[in-house]
Amino acid sequence: MLQVYFGNFADGRLKRLPFVGYILVLGLLLFTFVFGTVALIAGAEYAIGGNLADAQDLIRKSLGIPFLIIFAVFMILLLVAGLNITAKRARDCGLPGWLFVAVLVAVSMIASWLISQNASQAISTLVFAGLALIPSDTFQRGSK
Image 1 (cartoon, rainbow, N blue to C red):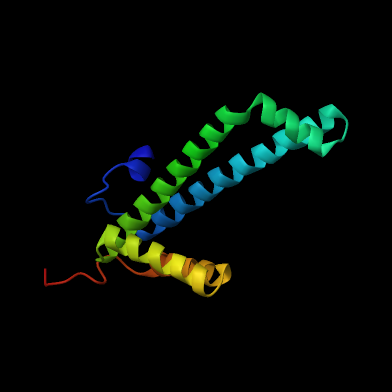
Image 2 (cartoon, rainbow, N blue to C red):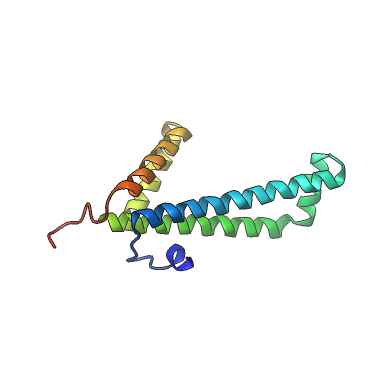
């Protein structure tokens, strides 16, 4: 599984169903990590006696920089994995993988800045649906 997420950056391909599955696994990992963080804060709040500000202060003092580093590394890994499997799926459709990802990121950022965050999310959802539904080699140039 790590090979799919972090291997074959230049020439890997990914079929439709595995793409959907791997995206769902990334979402589940993100949800689990965020839920664990919230549970940690809630547990600390309960241990302190219900004062949320004191709980956050305790966590900040005891975990602080190491947690921020772990959180940043985890989020960067999720981002790289998501972009890599999107590039692989685009390549499988016959599109240039990393160029497609770069254009997608640029269009999403521009839509977010100029229109709204909802527009950016709509674009990402439409692209995901397209990548999940478009058959392999649809945009392949030349004859085979």
